[in-house]
Image (cartoon, rainbow, N blue to C red):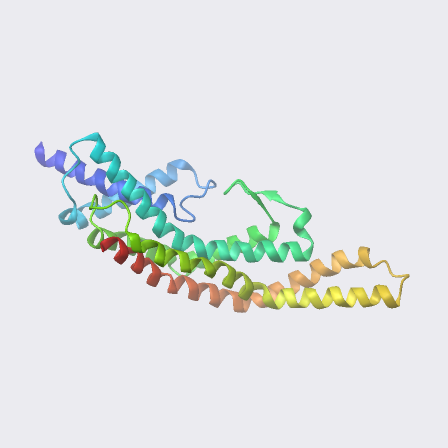
Length: 258
């Protein structure tokens, strides 16, 4: 009986970290995924990791105050790891939103059921493409590997609520969103800019042409065509960002390790 209680306590400690980390990661935190699937995946991953990391687990908290401190620390750890992954997905979605506004989809804002905020059609499309590339590039395997590595690098319930050097790692990563936004859609934006200039010249030279009526379908068509052509370059670039993601994730773990 005591051995069974010990196993259950170890399982609860592992499930706390797994749940806190997956809660902040893209795909797992999506509202489109049923709660039952998310809970079941946390339980299955925790059950698989418990015998592997049992030797690194601390004793189970004896008081509720110690338990609250442990959960809060695990939430902050999950937030810091999830922000690294979310920077890349946010950069891709920002690129789609910016492109959608330039193409004329800005007036067709939607309520994204995933985030509950207004997004554009192109933003949702780019986010779905990034999700497919993330899964195709085994990004989920990388996240699970970092999750397993975290138990050895950062003991559960360790000292300190948050390392001071963590901000020095996460804050510089903020420029990654804007860098990705520019690199992903710069060619298409250039084509649309030249199209607007051409429409302006047509309006000045041939006033009889209804430029406003002609510009909307032409801008959308050119945007979609050149976006389709640039996907051959966007795909490898985004996959490369997902491969590079392992470096900042490891840095975050080292910061928590001290």
